[in-house]
Length: 267
Image (cartoon, rainbow, N blue to C red; front, top):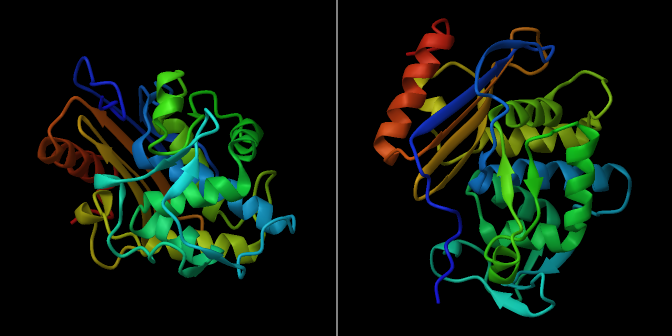
């Protein structure tokens, strides 16, 4: 029996949240409504991993054996397959650095890398970061592809407001509680700038600095980005979530929103 990754949307809906450099909400609509998160949970996983690195509990230079096999919520081993696999991922057993896993998790949205990072840091560490930031619409309760966790009702969901807050903490240069150390912050910026699946960025001028993370499965299409130099007060953070729309229509909606909210940066 094939178990769907996410429940099919019952209706078309969208949400967005735009923050300024200080985290103040500039514009928002339904920003606290939870959506199936798709790959945007990888921001929360990245935050937990970088926090562990800051604390000395995760060596980013360490080399581990690449794998697509993980222990599920039922204690049994499951293997990723089909669309979950990235053809460019190192083959089973090949050495790969933890830092490269973090980069692959973000820039090409590798599910193998994501589950491997989750195996290294643990779901409780991700939950701790969610609680630290006060993200009330976010739950990261299972590995990608873990059918036993899906059957048990474990959810991966988030909101536009929570995504905007999370990317801000990952890249912000200020010293507020929840911020990362400079080395970890630079890694987050590098990974987000290297994003290969671009939606918000396509509506921006080519000279605008941008780093982003997209998430998509059938019926859901999201993107969250920092726009501008995060070391300045000109930076902004935009998250857009959509459900029940074909991908082309969702991307068009996101583009229109970028042009309406950020006319100074848009094409």
